[in-house]
Length: 310
Image: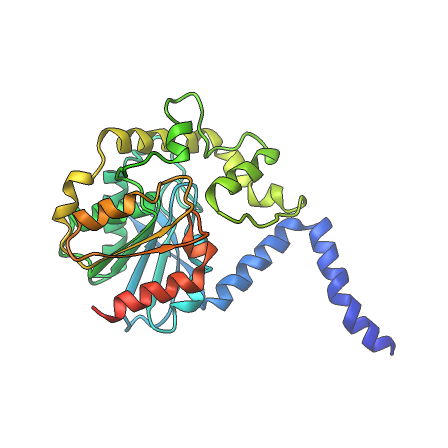
């Protein structure tokens, strides 16, 4: 009986100890378990003197999916999706410069063209041959530029709630950020984090108080730099959207969106459909800005269905 009690309560005690005393280790454990479930491992490669951390999973002999995260995101934004992809595909998900564990140099140029050129150099450094490129939000804008600037260097394009184009309706984000007095995607403190999450996802998940300092440490530490990057790309999107260049996209294209996206309005979908010949689209109901996190299995099913027909 004593042994049985130990077996039952020891894991609970260990969990409580990590939660109250070592919350950072608990979050790290969760990240490790998520990567393990998706069969991804962290690697790195030096590109033009800069170390790029990235996640890799699946068989390298299978078709490659190059996944590009959005603003204030990182490579683990794709860890929820990976379990449904790594059996059939070779998955690569990097941290872009300025985000995650990549270089945080405030003097770098963070416009979309510069980031697209860096992504192409990263792909070349890994020897990726015409990968299927997918991106979310800012990463979708970069993926779209990749298709425009390097049309022969990718096999297909998947846009998940991508920035860089204007729809018929303004989003809540666009209305709130009409000038540079207020950035809705920057948090001032931990209490502000719930507001940010509610903007990004349609059905926010509860984040325990002890874990918030760990989850949002990056956003607070690099607050000023993230604010700078946001206004660089926000002003570029306002002044130079890619609406008029969509007809130049020649690769098969999938458009994925969340109906309740507050950052980029769903009215962008018909604009993309009309502009990119032969494109396909899927809109998820009751989903916000990050479908690969909110409905990973459904997102993977749509992506695999699209890729299977190429």
